[in-house]
Image (cartoon, rainbow, N blue to C red; front, side):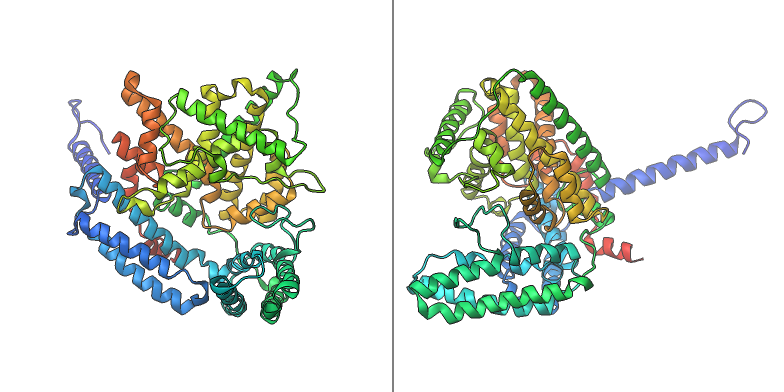
Length: 566
């Protein structure tokens, strides 16, 4: 094409081409703007509140594993699609930011359930979906009577029924999921948190039914036959899984395309899995580097020692609790509501005292030496206090939400933020523990991403975690694999990425307010927003819409699945 005519001016063809390019760009921008706009339907905010109540009641009604089947899942999916159609017909564009945030939160909750019904399908793919429901009833103290007796008998009958349903429903099972279930049925988990103490831990779920059976023989013989039936059913599931495991060859992860969709549309993390992998690698490098620097800084100081008794350990917790509460108040870190108990024992603590033949496990190696990192994370003002505050939330929509990235991101932020504020100035060796925790969370992020993209197996993820994390033992690593790698995508990575989103929100707000910024008021705002994803809290507090624009550019799961099927 000739760019200029003989007079040096642009040729007619050039002008036409430029106009065409500009027109194409304007059209693309217009289409992008249109695609990235909130819905302009007919429903008002009151309709959104009603739909929210209906959805969460419906979701709760469908939780009984005894009702799981392919037919039930199809019926539930049809019902969900009806609610999603109603959600799409809302006049969201006319609403203020807070109400738009509520809309997006509900949309993500529906999309998450949609993903569970169409992709994750735990009742079909994960034996642990059934095994996890079998053990807790065996912890009951005998004898029982009245309502407790009725509840126990119902639970024992349900176990027998659950085994039959598991054998009927399980297909497309990843071998790694089968291996975890087989281990849990036949072996102690080696961690024992949340279980009654036994000097010799029972051998898995089957062993716990045996434990209950022996106690019934001596204190409530009327239950023996029912417990035997439940134990035999559980044993039959174990034998069935051993027989079928060689044919269980499905992939454990959802694949890169669906993972990226889930991160954006459900988790509201505006990053691709490639982005998060790069962020996770950088965070693993950073935490290891800071761990090394802290060890050098403290090289002439005595190592932290393990307590010699439960009494000494619990005295350490009590001392830490007092120190943290004082720090929160004197440093104006945030407002602790009056309804938060003054005594930490009313709330509970995260890591119980257990004497093990092989010595403390990973969590205990850290917690026993200095409870403060985990006390910030899991107790005050972390998970325990966070949960208490969320339970008092009366917002008609947000009272339902407990987003993993928000909950775990806040808790991980509560480990390093106090370090930066000086809490650990008199606890120099504990700063090493903070970075040890950070190393493990970053390693879990990479394991989550790579497993979901079917690049590694669960044993390979566990091996990677142990190779990167000081003190990490095989039992804690395996139990964490069950927690973080069997769930829908995003829980394992939610710690590190959620904390990044929290820091981003902090940085944005400081840049907006400059000298008017007050940290305690900022933290109170974040907590008042509820348990919704950080990206939505950021939009509500700051008004910055760069991330939310990506969420308005919405692709329903059905469209994504159809695209992948082509």
